Image (cartoon, rainbow, N blue to C red; front, top):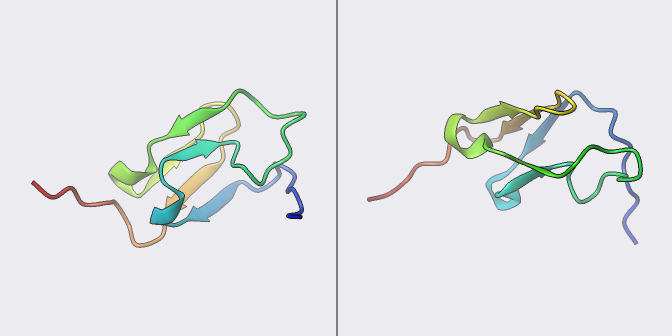
Length: 67
C-alpha cells in the first residue's frame, strides 16, 4: 500500500506520464484538500494550482504537439 502524502509541498516536479495532471494528486491526502482541478502544465512546462498555489514543473519542459 502506498503511503499518502500531506499537501505541504509548494513545488512538485512531474513527468509526462503523469499527464493529464490534477491537483490534488492521487498520492495526496484528500480529507483537507480543495476540489480536484486540472493543471495545464503540458502547455508551458509549469503551472500553479489556483486553489493551493502549488507550483507544478514538468520535467523536460512543455509537451510538443505533432501535426
